[in-house]
Structures are given as structure tokens and as C-alpha cells.
Image (cartoon, rainbow, N blue to C red; front, side, top):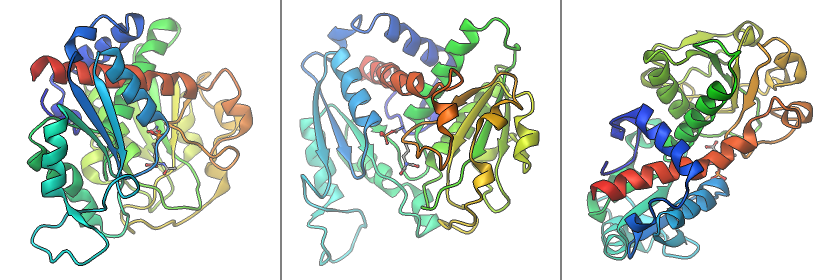
Length: 324
Ligand code: AN0
Ligand code: CP
């Protein structure tokens, strides 16, 4: 593996999931791989889980870790080529990426969608500019359109529950549901979850359904062959896993079209499922998107899911270190 920008960088998904599960059982088995090497974690946006879990995974592999918040710790970075740099951005990504690439053997980058210009966000300029000019492997810590380390942790979490729960059907039903929120959020987590769950559905591991209000259709390249049901109750029937996430509209780009509270997940929703588990990438706003009674019940997997971010990062960094 050179870069980890999306699912397309993964050669064998089953093996990568298993590598994460193995890392959890034996975190320090590969400490030699990162010895005397350095990873730089570059954040254009806030983070709790991604920052700490990736740092921890890197340290488990023997890597040195440097973390930087762009614009706060460093200069603001210009991404556009050929512009006169007379804005508030004092440094160009061409120099910044090249320089960080001289200090670091791997670079992780978090850069959310701006949610203003759809074509621009979906071009993934920040990831591509860093990949072009850094000269070292790039890891996506959530980009404008994807959050693959989250999706890998989600796959690990579902796989673990499958192995621990013999009563689950051979192909558990996984439902991605939109949740209400007053602020426009990126589509990245939902896009990636669709991408990775469609792959799991294709290999016969799960059945995958997406539910959201009209107007919240995700980009067709991410929805793929998933079944889309606009009625949330109908979608939840017999579900084994409910994955909640808010995203802003893709078609009316970046807009909040509804805040309908009936889309929040409560125990009434869980009762429609097959004793289903609730998943969310976090951070989650309690009682706006999901009720306390769900998050505080044995149905919730959110803490285990966040814990698995360490093992998803470790599986990916191990692959990169082995092949570079
Ligand atoms: C971000 C998002 O929706 O993309 C990060 C989630 C991991 N969430 C918020 O901004 C609240
Ligand atoms: N799930 C996730 O990526 O969380 P952070 O934004 O806190 O990193």
C-alpha cells in the first residue's frame, strides 16, 4: 500500500480487517516496523478520536509522531496553483508538502469539505496536492468526501460482533440512517460507510440499506447498489446494525433541508430492529440525533467503535510501512 486515500487503495479488505483484529490482540508485535521513522499528522480541522488513535497506533508500531494544526501552529496553506498569493494564506502547499515530506516518512491529513462548491470539494484538492508534492505516503484522516479509517474501524466492529453473536443471521442487515442536525455537516463519513459496506455486501458478508429524507440522496458513486428506503421505520425492520450519521444535502449542496426530529434514533426505533446494535462515528449530539436511552444501553457500540479506530489505523500504517 502506498497511499491510503480510499477503499481503492486496499488490496484485500478481509485481510486488512483481520490485521486490525490481530493488532488489538497483540498491539506491539510489529514495533520494529516503524523504528527510526516519523509520521506527521496534519490537521486542518478539529479531532479527538482520529488524532489520538492514529498517534497511538503509530507509537504501537514504533513510529515517532509529530502533530500540527494548520493555520494555528503553522502558516495558512494555499492550495490553488498559479495564484497571486495576496490572501491570508502565507505558504503554498507545493513547498509545505515537500518540506513536511522531508521530515516525515508518512503524512496523515485531515481536511474537511468546505460545503460551498461541490465540484471543488469532490475533486479532493488537498489530498491530491499533498500526494503530488510530499513524495511520501499519504493517509486520509477524513477528507472532503471520505473517512476511510473510520469505515475500516466500522468493518472491524461489525466483524467482531458477528463473531461474538452466533444468533446473528449469516448476512446481517446493516442500515445507514440520516439523523437530524441544525448545522451542515460533510457527507464524508456516510460516503465512505456506503463505499465500504457495498464492498462487504458484494462479498456476501452483509445486507446494506440506506435511509434518509428526500433531498438527502448521496452521490450515486457512493450509493452504488445499496437499497435506498425513504421510510425510516420500514428500513429499520429486522435491522441488526443501525449506523446513524447526519450529512448535509449533496443535491442542494451543503444545505440543511429539514431538521425533522422524528429521524433521531430512540428506543422505539431500536424495538423495530432485530435486537439491533447502534453505531455512530462520534462526536454525537445527545438527544438531538440519538436519545440518551440508546447511547446508554447495551445496544450502543459507539465506544467500542471509537476504540477500534486505534486498530484500523494500526492495520493501515502497518501495510504502508511494510511496502515502503
Ligand atoms: C465531522 C463530520 O461530520 O464529518 C467529523 C465526524 C468524524 N463531524 C462534525 O463536524 C460534528
Ligand atoms: N470519528 C472521528 O473521526 O472523530 P474525530 O473527529 O474526533 O477524530
